Amino acid sequence: MMTSLVACDSSFMIKSLYSFRIPGVDYDFSINTTHVAMLLVSLFILIVAIIARVKINKANASDTPGMFQNIIELVMSPLLVGVYPYSRMTGRHAWQHG
Image 1 (cartoon, one colour):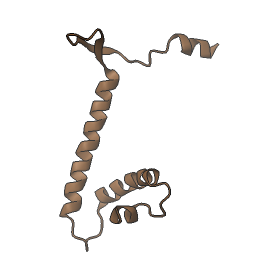
Image 2: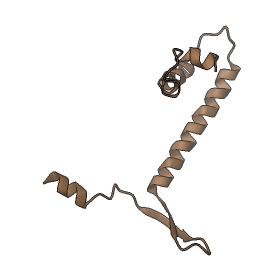
Image 3: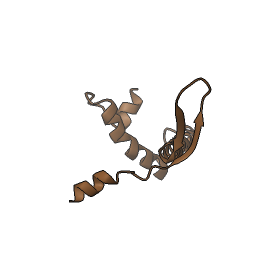
């Protein structure tokens, strides 16, 4: 009974915000809430990456990592393992060896 309710009302709360047509193309293009959410997440990731790059470039090699660098490495380490699945190097070692 529950699966039939979900299948009938599967809108996923995606709403069209703006529709437009390109001359010569027989298709209605639409910007919806998913596009806006992806844009906001991408901007957030870009801003965090820029801040991380500036902070890491300002740090001396002899300094101990601060809280921000530890959080960035904590987030990036699992991602690097996914990018380099057959490599033995993870985390900081993967970053140093490119």
